[in-house]
Amino acid sequence: MEYKHVDENARILTGDAAMEKLKTESDRKYLDTDGIIQVDEERWNKAQQYEFTEWIYRASFADDDRNHFHKKTFDNYDCLKDIKNIDSFIELGCGPFTNARIILEEFKSIEDITLLDPLAEGYMNNHRNCKYKNSVIEVGSETKNVKVVSSSIENFEIDRTYDMVVMINVLEHCFDIPKILSKIKRMISPGGYFIYADVQFDLETIEKISSSKYNAGHPIRFTKEYMNSFLEDNFEQVFSNVIDETVANEPAEERYFIGKLKG
Image 1 (cartoon, one colour):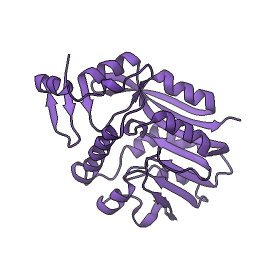
Image 2 (spheres, rainbow, N blue to C red):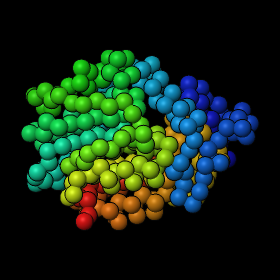
Image 3 (cartoon, one colour):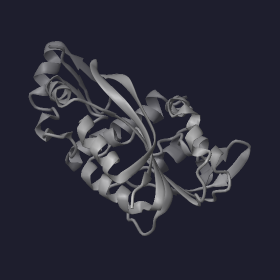
């Protein structure tokens, strides 16, 4: 079996050294039948440290986090062209570059735009290419004012709803997925839309990864069944695409989904 341990400062151990480290630091203790869907605050803080140092130091010249790849995999968001009456928008886990600047090209009349990320303030102040510095983004040739919120999704206080909620490649960095999914249902306006993408696994693969690999930046690994059930139970599918992925040298898949809230 291949062993690998990556800590919050991106220091890498492999082989016997990683195997020894995994005896005292692994994510296997969080594993249940849905995968790893909840971790404690100490574990999440390590993930945040990894994520912040990744963008501020190791990827300091980056200006995209697969945002255009996501657009292509969503078939250029063509299915959004016929959606009307979208007046408010929030992106959960916007990272330093935000998918909003691309998605909102289909909704240029929207002025009520919120970007949320626990590291948002740090990105604004420290990443040279952060796309929402001074709380504005460029959407095509237009400049849009945005509300920027530095908060985890779990601790975000919901005091209103939004017509469109976006969450793309975010959950693997979080700490309480059941709480997040419950909040998503409550923050979408009646008949509103959810744009989602993330990686998902077979349970056996999660078991293998949690026993032999550790990556400080990615505490969460959930099963296909867990997330597919949430999406299909709560949303009328508008778009779905599943692509093969490899995570920690193990097979996985990424599901790209757009749905309209049921009921």
